[in-house]
Each structure stands twice: as structure tokens, then as C-alpha cells.
Figure: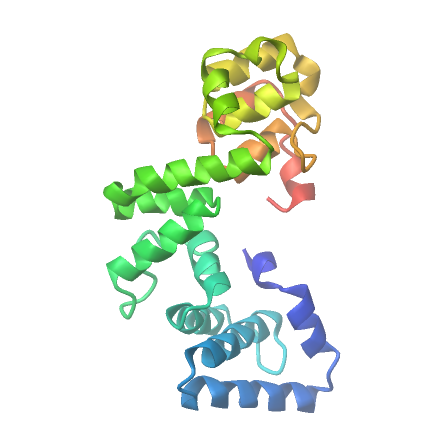
Length: 237
């Protein structure tokens, strides 16, 4: 979990400073956080303090303090802080009493629509009425990122390879995005060499795509077919 909060750019800048300067910077950030009335400014300060606590820069390592400052930053509108609270910490509901359920649902919707499988899963529990449109928005975003259009998506639901209009790897990616376990199974069965090969535009394997999109049933299917599970260790999963 902590590796996600070790933001290299921010932490790296702090770590190059002498310890006395590190402490002064953190104190200045705390002053902004507690005295400013500008939400954007104090949100950025709170987020930087959270990073400092995780990396032990100018302050002692303290994950609880990091979480507290992330909550402050998120409450003041810092979208990266909101995303971290959703995707890193095990909050099934609002992470703090100061965060209302409606605000939590708004964060989840935004994160889910941007492609977070974790946010989508938590949204289903928090607001069933918001889950379906967010799921569809997330699906369309993933399709667009892979270069698919709506027509191709609809065709592929009924035709494994769209009558030759798509490559096998494109069909496999599309089947994963659309959660078509049976099509994934058929494509891997016919093309076993693709199990651990890059198939997405970003060079991801079928297992890595499935993990990123939280396609749990497809992950299980691929692992059962001897997909290389160690890929998560080398890809940050």
C-alpha cells in the first residue's frame, strides 16, 4: 500500500533538502493547512504533508497522520487524495465522520468513471442507482483508450473476432473489458501463446488488464490456465 503514497517527485524534492529545511517546509505547509481559507491551497498543502509523513521527510513516519491529512485534502477537493483514499485504504464507506455518504458517492462515481475497478466495486455497495451508469462510463472509457468504437464493441459481443475485422489480441482485450468470460476462455483456448503476451496498446498481458479492471472472474480463469501471476510484482500490482 505505501508504495502508492511514495510519490517520487514530491518526496524526492523534500529528501534533497537538509533536515532543518525539511522541518521548516512541513511547518509552513501545516500553517497553510490550518490558517488558509483557500481550499485549493490548503488541499495541496495537506496532500504534501501526507506524502511527508509516509516518507518520513521533516516528520516521523506515521501512516495514520498521512491518512488524516489525505482526508483533509480530499475534503477540500484534491482529486488525487480522493482517489488514494478509495483505491489504497480499505474503506467500504466514508473514510471519516466529516465525509457524508453523498460526498463519498460523488468521489466514487468520479473515480469509477475514470476507470478505477476498486471505486466501481465500492460504488455498487454505496449507491446501486449510481453504479450502473458509472460502470457503463468506465467501460466506454476503457474501450476508447484501446481505440475501439461503440459499433466494434457491439459487434464483438456476438462475434468473437468480428468476422476478421479485428486481430485476435484486440478481440481478447475487448472481451476482457466487456467481461465476457466465455469469449476470453475461447480465445485463450485457441491461442494459448497469448496467455502471457502483451495484448493491449499499453503492452499489458491479459492477466494484467484483468487485474487493473478488477475483472475478478477473468483473473481466476487466467490464473487457472497458468497465466504468470508474478507479473503483478514487476508491474506494480
